[in-house]
Length: 172
Image (tube, rainbow, N blue to C red):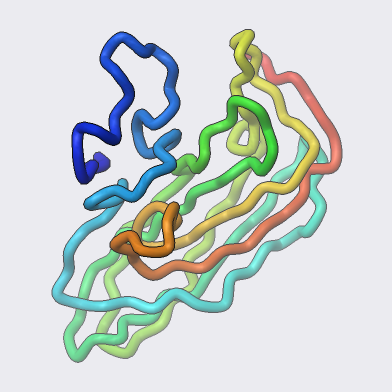
């Protein structure tokens, strides 16, 4: 759930477009971003890795990052993966594509890995057709959604990217 700073940030009730609705399409600065949580432990994300720089429309890619518990106590974390399709009309600004709950002892580091398949890097176009399009896909692995504004409350995270090299229409 996204907690907005003010109701003035929301579009008029009669506007049925998705612009500035839900975390996926909100471009403003929220009070608490989607996925934000509180913990007694603090975590650091580092060393993002992508298994392939170029991925065909029928392929898959693995994205991973290291998560370190920087606290003096053990703690749990929900590691989240968001994807952004740069320059694709109608695509969400960011979209949650996976999460993993982990538990780390103080000082412990763990590699967290997500496998992304063709349906995960598809978008639904305005005509309702699900399609994989050429272009760059940015990935964010972190404690909450990627920062939309420099001054927002932000959790830690790392980014990586890969390119889709072909197009494909997916069945419903």
